[in-house]
Image 1 (cartoon, helix red, strand yellow):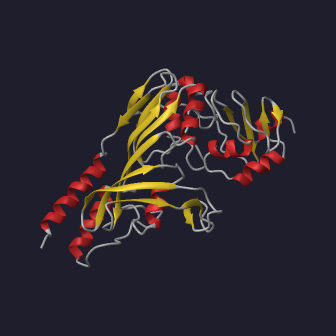
Image 2: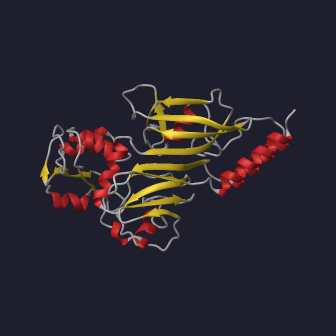
Image 3: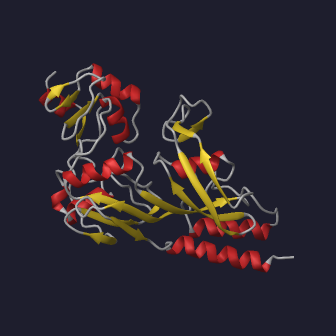
Amino acid sequence: MDKSDANQLYEHHVFEVEKKHDLIRIDKFLLLRIANTSRTKIQKSISQGHVFCNEQIVKSNYKVKPFDKISICFEHEPYDKEIKPEDIPLDIVFEDSDVIVINKPSNMVVHPSYGHYTGTLVHALLYKYKDIQNTGDSQRPGLVHRLDKDTTGLMVVARNSISLSHLAAQFAERTIKRKYYALVWGDLKDEEGTIIANIGRNKKNRKLMTTFSNNEDGKYAVTHYKVKERFRYITLIECRLETGRTHQIRVHMKHIGHPLFNDNEYGGDKILRGTTFSKYKQFVLNCFKILPRQALHATELSFIHPKKSKIVSFHSDLPDDMQNIITRWRVYVNNTKN
């Protein structure tokens, strides 16, 4: 199969290696760059001749060099429908000719996929910023990271290929700083801590992630947390990501026994702490209605600007639904003190 056939039949990713980059194997390079994949999947594509460097097929031991143009095709049919731009309002925190910083609302999927054919962030971006159409993956133009559908807060999007490569390298090298606020069930024992646990696909439900005790399974993941406010039965925490795995905060907090408040995929949509009084139960159920999603918000984002070569930082206040819940819990705790 030649490269043009592969482009037509398989999911296609393209990368340009940045100017200052260590010589690493191409399979490791691709593993760091592509979300939701595995070394096995990448190596299979390499063995099938679906990985190219500067238009030439390469083997897994090839070491990438600065300015190499890398492309890979995966052996499965992706969502490949034409994306039609949609006029969807966006909360733009910052924009210039190189990057866009967005405050993503809840109930918005970031990019098209099966079951989410319209109304995504990508549809909205293509309407407002036509120049990102040819930036990276055709189904995920400009994207270097993402937030879950019901997670709110800050995201950065690249407006050109140079910015895309620059930002991707920062994510791979863990130099991008991200902070989140989360409401979790329970009263955490320590004021701060670090969770280190590999994360990978749940073998029983591939839509979910899980932690692994065997260091050879899943991907290395580190989350730092700090208590901001306690409400007896739930706790407001600040999380800082050292790595960026799918559902990382949600999975890590479940792993230590403190799932996110109203996280219906990881067990937080049940009353996990508190009394048996009917008034308390009704209070929590009312909170679930006000916040019909996991209580997670990306509040701070810092990165090196691709062109200006200086650190830029952004902040997003808690959305109304989370702020409303926090206020209600403050009142509830104060009114039920002994």
